[in-house]
Amino acid sequence: PHHIIFVTESLRMTGRVMVWRALLALALCASVADTFKFMVNWKVPTLDAMRAQRIADEKFGDKKLVVVTGTSSGLGRKTAQALLRTGQYHVVGAVRDLDKMELVAELDGFDPENFTPMHVELANFTSVRDFCDRLKDFKAAKPIDRLICNAAVYQPSLPYAKWSVDGHEQQMQINYLSHFLLVSLLLEEIAKAPDPRVVLVGSVTGNDNTVGGGGVYPIADLKELDGLKLGAKNPISMFDGYNFDGAKAYKDSKLCLMMTSNILHDKYHKQTGIAFSSIYPGCIAESPLFREKRPWFRKNFPIFMKYITGGFVGEEEAGMRLFQVAHDPRCSKSGVYWSWNGGPREGRGEEALEKDGQILGGGGAGGGWDSIYENDQSDKVLNKELAQELFKYSSIVTGAEWPPANQPKSPCPTLKVVGAFTSAMNAKEEAKRMAQKPGMVAGLPGQLTAGSVSIADEIVAATLGAAAKTAQRVFLGELPEEAMKGAEAKNAAKDPLWRRVIGRPSLSEAEVEMYSKQPKWRRFFRKPAAGTAPVAAPITGSATEETQ
Image (cartoon, helix red, strand yellow):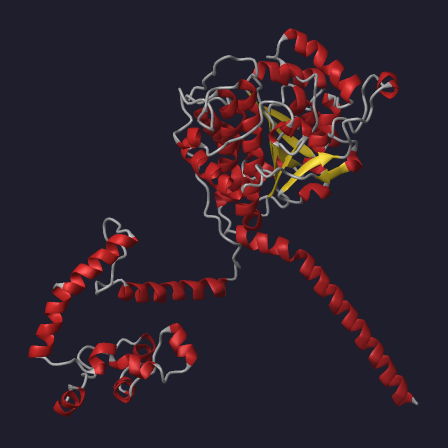
């Protein structure tokens, strides 16, 4: 019986060990992504790096660092309020007017320990670059956890374009081009964070599969980007290359932001771990965004949105929505256009009067915290080919530089060594393949069309080629098969498949004998000592006779 008890206890212990091993494996799998990212970002610590880390720890503690453009008014102001209210973030407010920002921060009670205003003029690329330099100095070794591209201007009533310092249409540069440049300059610093996010504030007006975006003229449409391809610089005011329309310029800028969010997701999400997303926070009818609209519009538009469409969204609610995308764990998903459930007919009539128009879910902008969802995007937003063109020419216009868009690679040191060795071998073999021989045309100046190549072939075959073949038959006779195909090709067919795949043919008996008298490394690299390589056997007369 004691043997049975012993076996039973052993089985129980084995079962417990297996359970613990399974749990440990699950824990390792759960943390493999974080470990992978840590290894990729890890560097040998230096004194300067340790000093920068100590400064960052003293300045920020365990708070996340968030950069928000346009925090002095409207949506950005309310978003900064919500972020600071949690006590979990240090907010850098990127604004044009520092005096106004300081006044707003005092009125709203922003904690100066956790809020830092910084100047940036989005109508000037140089100012954007200067802002990024100052931000990097300020944050020391602290990574940027969130970048919220919010600032925007809306100039629908202008009969002509206003130009930025760099000569671009003002709305397009402030709303889109400068934010495009900003993301490129901060991408590497954002990628260092454990849960990084980049949020681009889009609009229903840039998404033409909705009533607000597809039912109100003008419609956002970049067409073939003819204006951008020519630099989109004074006097070219519109990305589509046509005449200026203030309302359309704003809508086009929002379409650009939403397309850019998608292309950044495609290019860099897997590589960096950054969650790229866009949002529509709702129609903020009382926002300073409408400050350049006519007085009658500013007075009546909020009333219309409150009591007729039910689509009114207050600044406080909109700020909470943008805050949610930056804060909520559910919003760590990349490549999403976030919206909030609701319909344009909710909140109309008596209910709107009772609640003074403050109805959650209005205008398709949706309800509260739990009503967030992944909204559909229009065909224009999802046009990958045009998005690639937009990314390419926006980079040229802004001077933005991006890292290569590669798939993530293992940081394993062994694989890096093997990879380096393989690259060296590949370079060696490619150099052989690039030697000048008949049929070698890569890298030659100019290009020939298929038609011209065919014509050239016909001419050569009928003249020089025919003469050369005649001379060959008269003076040399027909060439033997080995001379035409090469002796190695004859032997290569006998090699195993793996040798043919890697291009490493078997050694001949003469080569085996030669390498047996030399160091092993020479055989591995196929580098015989000078003067020891076997001489190819001459073609015998009998062989020549057999081929004639």
